[in-house]
Image 1 (tube, rainbow, N blue to C red):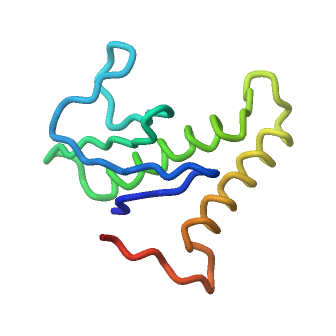
Image 2 (tube, rainbow, N blue to C red):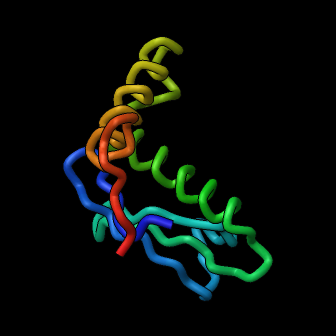
Length: 107
């Protein structure tokens, strides 16, 4: 799993934790903190690596929506899809994840 990911102009540290992650009084698999620029993923033994990776992508999508300032409740479908696509493209380009780019090596 990546140890850092760039969302827009911000570098987020990706942290694994054995501690419970609580958001709005509910136990979660992950969370993103827009102030400290950290994404925390539950490192529970019952979660597979695929589950942890999917959780990372879930939090990244939250980060893109926040960075692109998308109000998905009021945006029409094309605007929402375009903003998300732009955010995903920027994420992949900034992190060397596009075809032909060098993939970021994990530390």
